[in-house]
Length: 239
Image 1 (spheres, rainbow, N blue to C red):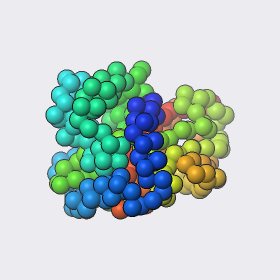
Image 2: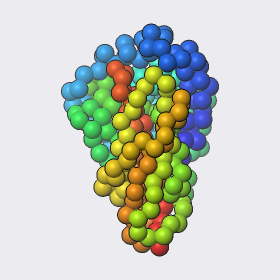
Image 3: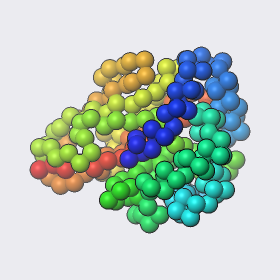
């Protein structure tokens, strides 16, 4: 579902990628690095789950100040999102996609100041994953990047129970390597790089799926000073 939302920022992503073109000295790279230097690895106040709940409630009530304040500075700078574009374009689109009432399906922290939270806030209770980071002592959401495309098993797909292949495409900037973690039903699944292109990396792994419905969560973080991160989640079934 977040993949559809990421399309809302495609123009900004293309602009940032073209301007940066893999050069760390680009204005975008410099801007995100500046924003990142304001972030320490101290544990933020509150919990990432509370921040996601506040964000969903603010999206539903169209509270532009709260939603803008909960958006991470690296997201704003990297995608060149100003408040007017956020309020007039992205917030209304998010409101159509997200539900303010949701149940937490999965949450995990990475160190003191990074986390992923998955809630059933999408259409028909589809899982939605949010990556978060600490900024100036509080939790903030990182949206739109990296972009994920799960290909095997696809969201909603039914596969044969037992060992089944996992294939996950992740879009990245050419100047940024990534660290990727994948979990099925809360247990980490080892993945390796199957192929690499200019803007696309395919990760592969093997799932051991018992009969029933399963939740996959993927979290990716760029290995750069600004530590851009993103997450996705989807369900599939085995029988």
